[in-house]
Image (cartoon, rainbow over all chains, first blue to last red; front, side):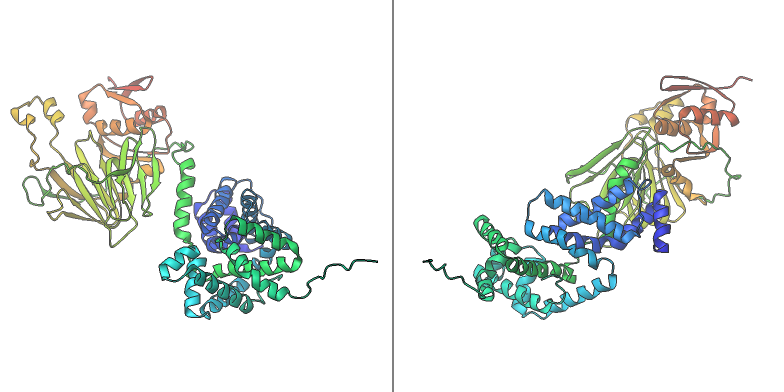
Length: 182
Length: 375
């Protein structure tokens, strides 16, 4: 177990808000991305991560962290995500798949891999044709519907659909080696 | 004779995928309608190949979340929100008693700068700010015996002492950062060049210039004080007039001509009836080496330094939610110096005062009666 983690957790146990802040900020962004893989909803992801930490604070005196903090907090967030999805019946197939393959579990032990992955995805997206990239970003990152994108760019919804399809297919090919089980 | 089974379509997964791909993608991006969703679900369930194809698309979609364009997660803001949420259940819990008293070192030389006594000079007028045009979005009263810490939408931290009202209008943090305080508050302002942070209190406006400061402006008080613990503030009563600048360790004290005092002195004159808005305040700026004492209340420490018993009583009333009657004028004027570190109850506080001050007191319900001890 990481020496720094031991000290932080010990301080957390004693109610040290600064230690708590440190543990929160060190993992927040990564945990949100991680949670968003399950929820596909960034707001829900943020909420799940905040809730997980709120519980950690409440239970700080009694909580048992045998592993280092990293796997502990990822597991806690993962459980909360699955719980959230159970109540939402969305895309059950994918959830089953995540549970079955523990897909995210192998990339949270290695921050270097995460960074690498991030970089490759970034490059892949940047390599898309301009129009295609723009449409893909609007859909993926701004969570706009095809009709909204079409309206905004003054093109037909069918074009949007086609461009997103192209984007995904290109990215898929580009990132094939990253996609674990397909 | 057997009927030949129907021909089975083999090996065209690729072209099948091509046909259904737009639908699967619509399903993933959330654009599919109910019947399309149902159709895709069924298709996914038909074979492992279909499932794999779906999953590979879905994961590509999910992986794209790593893209830096999507840095929507702000850990600092999120933490402030979370801490605010946790504080609600933690704040104001009485702190375990660790009773202790000691006197502050013989009053360290306090440089007093008496700025001016009368006149327009610095432009501090007693003037109520005009009626608010903005709608109040947040309004809170902290009752006596309580204390509260808030984190405002702009990340500014505010501690409100007992008996304090605090509010801010809608649009706070976006179009304005103007709050109103009646009582005592400590502000650790999150600096924002574009929108100045302004506290309206006791008829004045205190504008932060990157700062932590306290304000004492209880409605019934005859005085207004603001102490700067960090940075600078500007105090003004009228936005058109340049105000007084205060730096770190400086305290602005304004005593307003208070009617009750004059009555007490038996000097009731016609002037009492018309305290016009232009009556100048008495104003002094003091350099206070122990500036922390102005904010110590937020850590449950009360510090009195040569304060009249009347002032002390006022403060104890608010802190412990009691009423205090002082039975001798001489006692009311007596100066008291002392420090109460995390003293939890009025009973204890009274015992501590009694250790060093010749008083007797009785306590009944929530009322404390104090007299000078007869010798």
